[in-house]
Amino acid sequence: MGRAHEVRKVAMEKTAAAKSKLYAKYGKEIYMAAKSGTPDPDTNQALKKIIEKAKKEQVTADIIKRSIEKAVGGSDENYTEVRYEGFGPGTSMIIVECLTDNVNRTISVVRNAFTKTGGKLGVSGSTLHQFNHVCVFTLPGVTEDEILEILVMNDLNFSDIEVEEDSVTVYGEANDYNLIRTAITDAKPDFDFATDQIMWLPIMEATFDNDEDQGKFDRLLSLLDELDDVQDVYHNMKL
Image 1 (tube, rainbow, N blue to C red):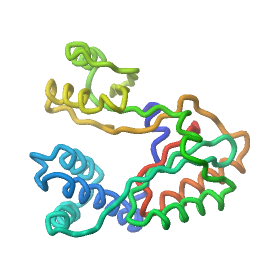
Image 2 (cartoon, rainbow, N blue to C red):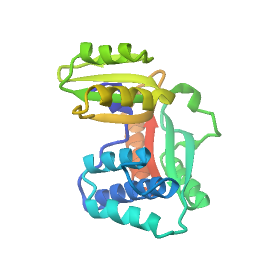
Image 3 (cartoon, rainbow, N blue to C red):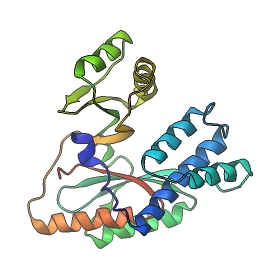
């Protein structure tokens, strides 16, 4: 379903461990959104958006409720957003976004994942310049003309539109996320977003020259996916 889906983190199987990781990921995000604003999604748009995404990924209502209640209860837990850039097997470049309560622990386990698979962490900016920070919206069951009309009527900028048999994907600058999303939802309140995300897309994609590098890369993604502090992973490899 387009470039955005190729660079998103590897989809997790529905195992107990994967569900636990998914619940922890959204539990942190919901907690932080509720703590930094109001605990009511009707007045806290950031919280509302995260809850909508969590429900789409089948996070239970109990997890959502407990995360909000923890924020309301005045918990002193606090999480920091950190981003790591690294070089993996072959010509792979990777961005790892984390939400952590212990930065020293997180950089240690992320670095270890790279080291185990023959990669290495880089300094800030070492790979980021090879990616664009974009907002991505995929809408099933709509036409290109419908989406174009909304964008043009609202005088919105967008960088690209991809059309497939059953969906349309709009790409824009990350800073325009709220403008584009609001215009679409105001025009078509019943639209259901298959993708509704700000992400890093590679300027140019690469491929592996051999199976050994491919195998190491797959293992690296798997190791990163197992880390509780890791929220999202982006890369430049064409899968």
